[in-house]
Every structure is written in structure tokens, then in C-alpha cells.
Length: 472
Ligand code: GLU
Image (tube, rainbow, N blue to C red):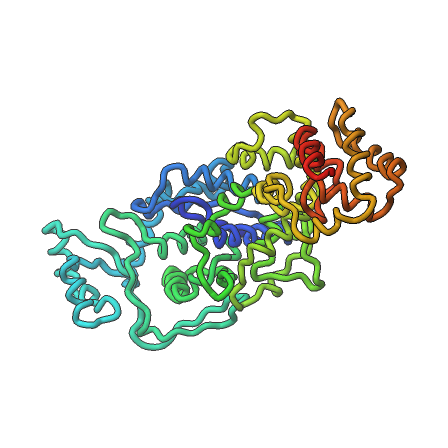
């Protein structure tokens, strides 16, 4: 049977890294087998609905290349693909379950439910499941509001099998008679997902393992409706080092946070695919196409996956290296502007800046650290630097270099570069005794990126000023 998977986000805000990981795995599982990847918007929790969140979902999936075959905007044979437009289905099947005595109308008030809880019950006590048909009719005639609850067995056990976590069995007495249809006739997530996955012919339900504990309820619903269960693929938790949750406050929870810091969507997808999955060899850099052909469900891991921003940065640096200067500039520009670095700089200067740091950069925002480390320094020699410059012949080398630079009109790297050699010739210095004094006397450091490029970025005035300061 052709594989059909769905990514079913709730439009409650930006896309969380954990959600995006579900999207990536859901996409790969379908595409690996040339199956269908579906986007379904689960917006039945109206209280949590956030304006603009659906657009954020489209934007994220599109920029990540996780293109869906069926969805709200694309259409398809199983639409609508937005749950709030599928309301009739939920009511219809909820009533069918009531008819079959697999669900019941519950008229309990909030106060009564609170008192049940207060008495120490861990779940709803099933009072309304014991109402007679006449009692139910009477309450309906009186117009008492009700919800519909799933009727779960009190004895026995329910088992289901997940591709990753294996077979899981839960005692039925632990399963609550959960609400499936609310007073306002909106379904709960736990009901809607079952109805839609069935009606949309979903073959593989891929989601985070936080849904493992709810799955027995789904199993019972499928059984009650006489439907075949899909294959479950629960993905391991994504945590930070030390088992902590990714957090909004620390800026590592959302896809958008990383894009904003200058990470590339391709790199994020690449890294995220490794959160709970690994290929047979140790390779780690993959395009989406490569991932699609390499991905296998049986290599999805059970144990929590650690989200390591440093590792993501490492993966990202591979992608940065492949970018053109123009494209990398686009990523760095918002940061350079925000830090007032480029307001009075020419295009050439900005291009050189990007060129100099491209190989040292892991993500866009890092251009600021690099700029501060190598260009925006307090010009102060340390003891080692001072000692180096005190060596015999250094003063002569610096003087020749200064004189040659003074005549340069266009202070570009390619014009500066030959003057280093020429300095060596004229001052009779070479190797370390040529390059080191020039670097130390202009940057106060013994290492750094390509010197002619750095000098051109610093500008003629600054470079001459620094040399003059040190020449005796
Ligand atoms: N709407 C659910 C969520 O955003 C979907 C879970 C599922 O994939 O079934 O978490």
C-alpha cells in the first residue's frame, strides 16, 4: 500500500524545533517510499489559536523544502485539510459511538468534576455512563449542556505497537473516559486525530513520543469504530544537554529563532534529521534528497535526542562555505546593520568583510563576534607582541612598509598584498620576521585572517596611525 503520512501542526505560534523534527521525519518516511506527504492544520483548540500561525507553518515548511502533496492550499481528494472545516465528521462519528454504546453524553457540571477531583479520583468517575436512556432524554429535554465521552472498559488491557517503541500495553482501568466532543461541538484533539487519520487514509502516524500515553485511547476508538489502526511511529524526545527542555527564553526553541540568528534552513533540516535518527555510516552532512534516499524507519532511536546548538553550528558552517559572497552577505546584513557596523561603509568594504570571515563563520550573527575580535579591537600590544617588535631589523621593516602604504591610493587587498613582498626585499627581512611584525604592528595580534584583507578593512588611516605609533 502506498504510504500516506501527515504533518498535523496546531496553529498556536511559531514552529518549535520538536515540531519541525516531526515534520522532517514525517516527510522522509513518505518520500522514501515515494508516498504522499499531507499537511493538516489542527485548529480545533480555538483558545490556543494564534493569528498568523498558519502562515508561519506554510513559511517554515516551504523554506525547509518540506513540500506537501495535499493540504489546505493545495487541495487533494481527502479535504478539507483544516480541522475546523471538518466539524460535521466529528459530530457524526461521536454520535455513532454513542449509538454503539462506545461513548456517552456527560452532563456533569464543572463543579461536580472539580469535586470528583477533590475526592482524589485521578480520572472522571463515569457517573453519566450509568445514566439510563430515559435519564439522558430527560436531561436533553431540559436543555442541560453536555459533552460526549469515550466509554472505555474497566477491565482488561489495551495494547498497540509502535515502530520505534515496540508493543505497549496499558491497563484499561488507567484509561480515562476522555471527552471526545465538547459542549460547543468542537472535537478534542484526541478524537479529531483518529477520525481524520482514518478518513484521510493515513498509513503512518508519525509524532512525538509525548503522545505514547494517549495512544491506547486511540486504539480503543479505532476498535469501537471498526477501523484499522495506522502504523505508529513515535519519535524520541528532543532535549538539551542535561535533559533540559528547549526554551523560548533561551532562544533555542523555535525554527524562526535560528533563522533569525543566520542559520540556513537546509542546515537546520540536515541537523534535525539527526535528532533521533542516524545513517549506517558516520556521515552527517546531507541534502534533503540524500536524506530521503538514506532514511530508514528502523534506524530511529528510542532514547532522547540531544539538541546541541554547537553541533548545529558545525553543520551550518558546511552550508555557509558553499554560499556565494552575495548570499552570505544577505544573511549577515541584518546583524551588521543592527550593530551599526556598515552604515558608512561601501559595498566593496562589506564584500571584503564577508570574504575575510566566510571560512571562520558558523552562522550569520557570528560576523559580529568576528568583527569585534579582529577589527574592532582596542589597539594594545601584549608583552609577547612588544618583545617581538623589539627585535633587530623590525623597525626597518615597519618603516619600509609604512612608506610603501603611504603611496597606495586605492587601499584594497590586492594593492596591499604585493607591498608585503616588496617590504621584505627592501628591508631585507623574510618569513616570520617579515609577516609577524607587520601583523602585530597593525592588528596587535599574532594571528588572524588574511593580512592584506584585514588591512584594507581597517582602512589606510588606521593602519598608518598604528604603524606610526610603533615606528621609532
Ligand atoms: N496537533 C498536534 C500537535 O501539534 C499533532 C500531533 C500529531 O501529529 O498527531 O502536536
